[in-house]
Length: 479
Ligand SMILES: [Zn+2]
Ligand SMILES: [Zn+2]
Image (cartoon, rainbow, N blue to C red; front, side, top):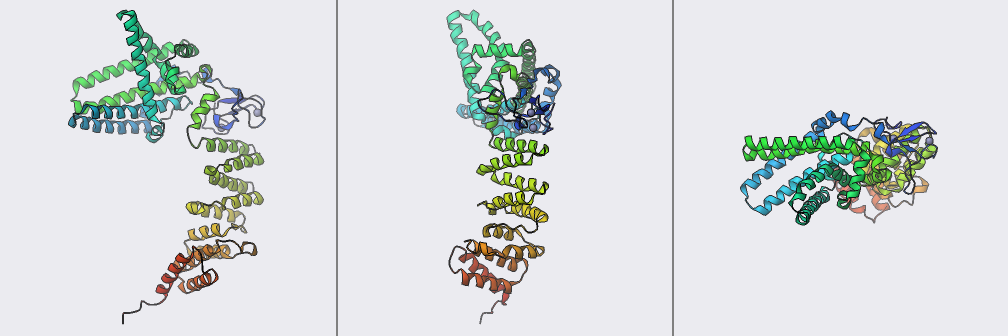
């Protein structure tokens, strides 16, 4: 079942009142509440507790096998092979132990970063492979460190146990550890603490939460390791070292991608039972910078589709509060009001949009939005000279002449705007560069400089005057 409003997203919550399913992004999650609330009627939502509703993982094996053949994963594997090849070459030529170790560590770290991204993504029900870049932003270094610490703890425990109980301890210990490995990796990926990943009580609760299917999970995982071992021995046996290196790492990455996509899906299927409710999902989501933006835009979608435009506006103005998202939110508000045929709302949002101090950085978008607004409400003009100057600077064609004139006419109210010289300068530049009318441009600059002789615009204005003068007169011959 997918979200009613985002039909590509899996529904995670259900409202009995409204008989509607929501994805994780379009419900109200409050820190101290047991369950999120419905956006439409404010009642608590019910989790889909998906384990009995989604396809169980043992029926998805072919999908896990196909996972590495998705474009993103495949590209990653190719890149990874390339890196392994280079590392292989370097280690062949520089026989310094320390460097070899560091390179190997780097190679493992890239792989670990990728497969853990595969897992956490799968835990959100997404079986599309992450791109290489997405995986790199997933702080792979600290994950590598955690994996190393995890292995050190496991090996250390083995040694201590062997020391205390004698060599009879080792074999059962290895058996128990390999049985617990899927659980440990899932816990490590989801909770990101080595201490919980090696905590026997947590491992036991994880195995119990999954129930008998854990045996299947362990079986599949064991089979994958077995094939990996086999592949490695074959490669070692048949191929020269230099070629074997990239092949070995590609095989390693390939099988681990399969395995971790399965672990991720298991975490998703049992997330309710494992206790990875909204809290864990919240933690995951706050990792990415635009999570807030995505969530608020998702909510706005719900309200828009329900025809509750005031609520949608409120959400978007909320989003606009955050400086990083102001531009996008206001743009949406303008478009939303244009669709609603609400000129007051559109102009209110547009005025906010054109007050952006960094408008010159998004000049192209600003002009596009301006054209959309004027198509709907021809009388609209931004209220600041700076915004108008940005727009005029973007208008680089003769067909804009009328618009440029409209934007350059300054009303009584704007007379005290400190950026008027800049607007006049943009107007003059349009005349010179687009209309090729240097005489008019020159007149405009002279007017500008006599009216506003001082200010930061002065230098650019004088430069433009020189250009216009030299264009106007034939270059004086040396005599
Ligand atoms: Zn949704
Ligand atoms: Zn509801």
